[in-house]
Figure 1 (spheres, rainbow, N blue to C red):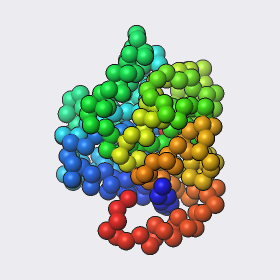
Figure 2: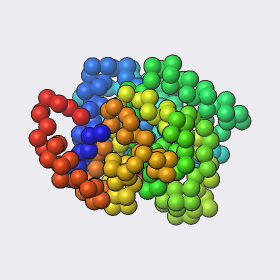
Figure 3: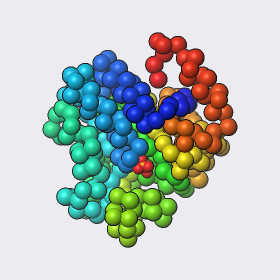
Length: 261
Ligand code: F6R
């Protein structure tokens, strides 16, 4: 696991966009795993800016979002399918239908989850998976207690996650759905490269557990310690509790220029 501590979200966006741009340069048909929430916004802003400058194209790429609230109506602005369109997909040149998400309105949820996993597999798997992390250590919506081998399924959101996400729902926790469909931890582990982004002190404990804690279903993100290619991109706030922060900084500073993340 590589830990990169950067001054701010813009720097995180830039380093991430370098990695995604390099991937698309060598594989224009790359499959991108797309997180929603606030953490990846700087990445999407930077990618959209590079697209505007003609430096990058998503024309042949595909995307799969991580998760979706159950039951939010199709036009709801906080439906993750709509969020990813607004913050990223509509700003670049993906082909129509190239970005998919789990169907939170499916009548047969287990069938929709199985079909989603199969669609990712048929696309050849995810080349780079962008992730945020919840204050309770979730990735996608794999809440504490999730099976470390899980596949897409319905999950109940923790109260903590609903409190955290109430900011997107007029500050009203009652408006935050109680259930979601989410890629499983096993699904995420199959991605070839994971870029996990966290900013701010509210993430510091989850980040400490992710990087330095024991692997445990209590902190689901810790499963990433078993992944061969994870890059954790942090600002100082999110890195605040890391025991080996100085070592991670030194390692990144002394990294050879040819060795990309
Ligand atoms: C969103 C997702 C979640 C978020 C996490 C952090 O698709 O899968 O795991 O990444 O809840 O959210 P933010 O970035 O808003 O703090």
